[in-house]
Image 1 (cartoon, rainbow, N blue to C red):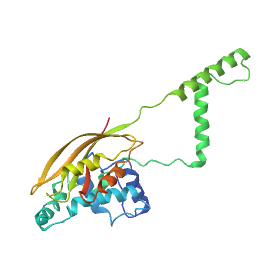
Image 2: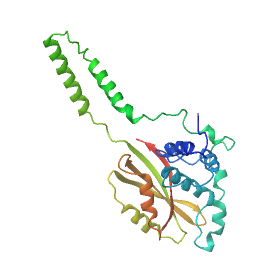
Image 3: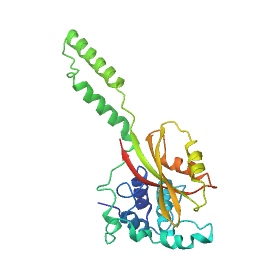
Image 4: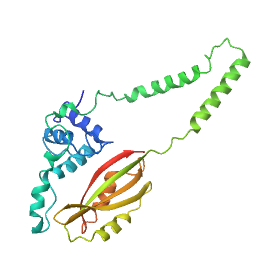
Length: 249
């Protein structure tokens, strides 16, 4: 059904839920879907109530306002970066309501949780026949043994850790930034579930180059937002970071 509105709490909650597990409205990079949704919002969502929507809004806003100017030599670059909205891929004529969830997902009422658990338990029991009082002791014992073996096997299964490969763009302040030192500082960041990969310098404009680095993360252990904040904490070298691409492994 797509997004309904970004004015009511319900509409903002839908956006919050949508970007909780996504960096962008559609796909793995910024597009006109983000631009349409960004423009539909009346302003910056409250970080204490919609932290993921707040993070997404700030990130997309960086494509509108451009890079921060630190020296006079970057005045032309600010003008260039400020036009990034129109250069993003996608159909700019599509309304923001054409994006988002295809259907609403009802939240399970907590009071119904025991009932749901009981129904699941009952389904497991049915796999091994009904617990009829008329069944003989031998049949009942066999059924209980089979049920116990099934539950033990089910509990013993462990799912492989979900991983993603991410490409980050790390932008410096100007062309005088020591990119070797920037990368060295970045790779000192150690997180459980984070593996740094290859990197390269990619020209931006006016002699400025950004660092593009690949990394693999375990989804349940590493927050990309937290990682970006740590990298951007190196304020002497790093102006901003962007997720250039993300793909599940």
